[in-house]
Image (cartoon, rainbow, N blue to C red):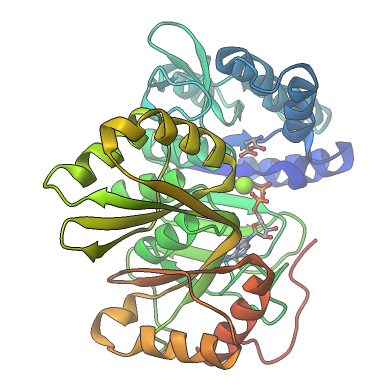
Length: 412
Ligand code: ADP
Ligand code: ASP
Ligand code: MG
C-alpha cells in the first residue's frame, strides 16, 4: 500500500462546507487504495484571531503560552475533518502533533522538527484508517508544546511525507499552483508547471508566502516532489522538484517581494579587525535577524555599516545598539523605514551576466531609487521604497518576460 500525504491550508478548511470538500479528497485517495495522511491548518484566519486575543491582553505575550494557544487552532479542524469523514463512511482518526510523534527542538513559536516517531500513524494506516494530523505543532524533549512558525503546517506535511516515505505530498491551497509572482499582487503572474527546490527555496525565503521555507528545505533534503494545487479548482498544479523542466528558456523564473523593511546605518565605527564581529554578535545575541549588510569606508580609521531588518525588529535593534554604544565605539545611528525588498530568482542567472544590470535599468526607467542590493548565484534583491514596490514588481515581471498572455482565474 502506497502512502500519500496531503495538506489543506487555512482557506481550504475555512468553513464546514470546505472541510467536507477537503474530506472528499481524502475519501478519493482512500478509495484509490492508498494509505492517507492528511495535515490540516487552523480554519480560515483563526490563528490571526488567536494572536489578536493575546495581543489584547499583552504587548509581548509569553511565548510558551502563545504556543499553548495557537496550537488549539489546528485541533479544531482535525476533529471536524474526522467527523466529516465518518459521515461519509470513512474510518478516520485525528492526532495532535505530539500524538503523531512529531518532535521538535525546545524553541517556542519557531521550532524546527528534529524527528518523527511514526509508529502510531503507521499502525492506524495498517488498520485502514485515514489519519488526520494537526499541522504547525510538535512536542519538545522536555514535553512542551511548540509551534513551527507561521505557515508551518506545510513543514509538518513534508516532514511526515519524508518520515513515512510517502509516494507524494500534495499541498492544497487557495491558488492553483506556484506562480511567477504572487498572483494577488502581480496581475500578470503566470502559473509555473514546475520549479526547482533551489528556486522555490529562494522565493519562499524572499517573501513568496505560498510555501513555508522549511517545507521546501525538507523536500529538497529528502528529495520529495511537492505538488502545490488548488483545493477548489480542478487544475494541474505545480511540481517542486530537483530539476525543473524549462518551459521557456528564461533567466528569471520568478519574483518575490516583502514590505515593512527598515535600513539601519551605524555611523563612524572604528575601522578595527573585530568591529564587524562585535557589531553583528551584539545583534545576534539579541536575536535580531539581519538581512542585507553594506560596509563603507568613510575615512582612514572610520566606517559606516548599514543593514536591513524587518521593521517590527527596529525597536529591539535600536535598544540593543544604544546600550552597546560604548562597547562598539560608534558616533551615531540613523534609520530609514517604509522600505521593501524586491527580488528576482532563477537558476539560469548563474551563466548569464548582465541580469543585475537589466534589473537596475528597469528600476531607473521607473524612477525607483535603490537603497541596498544583495546577490547570490540565483537571485538579485534590491531594497526600494515601499511606495514603489508594486510598480517595481510589475515592471520587472514584464521586462524579464514573465507576463501571462491572458489573465486567467487563479484564486478561489
Ligand atoms: P494556505 O492557507 O493554503 O497555507 P497561504 O496563504 O499560506 O495558503 O499561501 C497561498 C498564498 O500565497 C496565495 O493566496 C498567494 O497570495 C500567495 N503567494 C505568494 N507568492 C506566490 C507565488 N509565487 N505563487 C502562488 N501564490 C503565491
Ligand atoms: N495556522 C498556522 C498559521 O496560520 C499554520 C499554517 O496555517 O500553516 O500560520
Ligand atoms: Mg501557508
